[in-house]
Length: 106
Image (cartoon, rainbow, N blue to C red; front, side, top):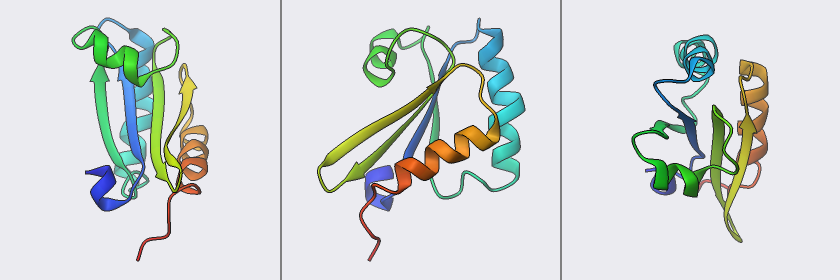
């Protein structure tokens, strides 16, 4: 979907057992969704406990939670990430950086 729509793919990698992951979702992601700040991206969540092999491919390192943003540029897919609980401002900045590498929409 991200490739079709030429939008960054934003993945919150966490786990049900992780208190920091729940805080990241409730205090950062949910308010961003409500404010419409994730409309220009394709957003999904990935539970590391349920899908460990996929999570290992998506995220650098082992620390949870992680926000991982993938964007397709002229030279291929690029990965940007933040580890630990983040503020909406930091997540928006990460998305902005990733969006700069996208080809212009025509």
